Image 1 (cartoon, rainbow, N blue to C red):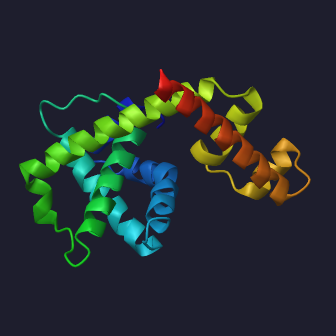
Image 2 (image 1 turned 180 degrees about the vertical axis):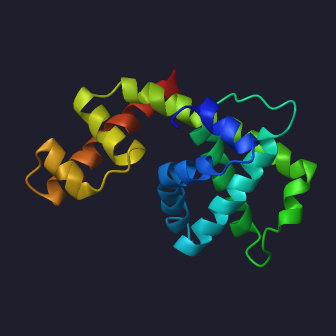
Length: 182
């Protein structure tokens, strides 16, 4: 099950296969986001589960149309939920909050912002060297460990791989700055 269509059909139905696929494909990214933003793996697991609830509720709406990739929806929802939880540090996000119209409006806005972010990032990636493009995809989109990247890209040490990552991120930053000046 690879396509967005198969995943959507599965999530709308009674089958649970897609949950395992989504977990396998996206939990690591959500965990990385949450743990890098004052959370724990346990928090990331909670956010992932809440994200799945919101995603299913959105998919089961009659007027729902997928206007971005499943990944974009999942990341936008997860980021929104986590940032909301941080803003309300003393108050847990409860399942009843998920039925609030304002909540869905915020999710929709988060998805649009995430979509815009990914569109811009993909454009920036076309403007950097091919080597950096491959390195960035391996690190950030495929979430490969630095040891694997070191081996696959032929770096003599993890330090050299990290230095190259920094140089590539700088290329993206420069492209972004140039585009923002236009």
